[in-house]
Amino acid sequence: MKKRLMPIVTFITALLLIAVGCSQSPQAKEAPHQTKNGSSSKKGNLPNIKILATGGTIAGADKSKTSTTEYKAGAVGVDSLIQAVPEMEDIAHVSGEQIVNIDSQNMDNKTLLKLAKRVNELLRSDDTDGIVITHGTDTLEETAYFLNLTVKSEKPVVVAGSMRPSTAIGADGPSNLYNAVKVAAAPEAKGKGALVVLNDRIGSARYVTKTNTTATDTFKSEEMGYIGTIADDVYFNNIITRKHTKDTDFNIAKLKKLPQVDIIYGYQNDGGYLFDAAAKAGAKGIVFAGAGNGSMSDTAKKGAVKAVKNGLAIVRSTRTGNGAVTPNREFEKDRLLASNSLNPQKARILLMLALTKTDDPERLQTYFNEY
Image (tube, rainbow, N blue to C red; front, top):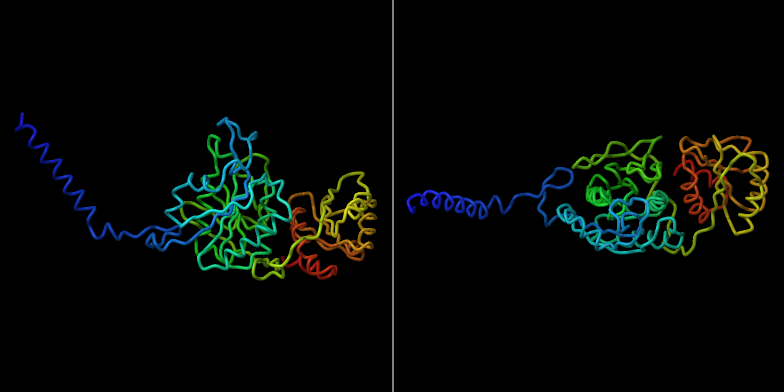
């Protein structure tokens, strides 16, 4: 029996010696760490990425694993989000901070300013190489565009969310968060303005929008296209031509409040009284989501012209979802501005910031042409 065991014992001993020898090999000790864009670097040289959490579906939870629409948003804190994706530590040194924990439909101007100021504060430090913001998808594009206009740094700022809560079967939050950190850690992401990462796609905050109520591929840049994709590595394919971040006129460091700007939706048989109501409620500007090329009914136009005479800025956008609202002499003579290719919700973001600089119609129109 002993003779039969000897060859087996000898074989196992040899394997153990080989394993020990490999673990002590200088080459094994100094094996380079593979980074997000294929280049090699030691793990100690990884970038520092800060995750700022605001709540939303990505932090949502429910008792049922099959529930994807009825859940509590913002139920999970930033520490739990980070712990759920330990693989992020292979691509960056990650730390987190909870800004708020809310449904994104409750994101307000006060919180926007708080978030943007914190982003700028962190990016001024050499200890922060990029920022990821977790956010509910309902108003994600508005926050992303606000950051695109107010962040004063070329360092990457990436906004991510999910369409399924963290407790759901097939939750997309962990993958989206991992990819967002990967993009924020990529040197190629610098200088591209605020980015939106979901469903393995990289969108510019200027162009991307939510297009579906529940599908995981809801965020699209249908008219302009995505600027990049993620397939293990990060690939950027297009460039952004509109002004953003350091090239904008907007400095919010000392700004305590944003002017009220409302959105009025155009429809058959609409009336001018909605403009009167917005002005009475304190609006300084109105975005009109018109049919087609920002068109207005005669009654709506009368309400808009009256509002302009009372000192409000009026910008025509479109409810169609795609296309640019073009200048029109009929509207220009009444100082009714055109949003260019900004949808109503993003036109509102730009008009709020533009009104902190000027109320001159020509200068306001320049902002919409360039931003």
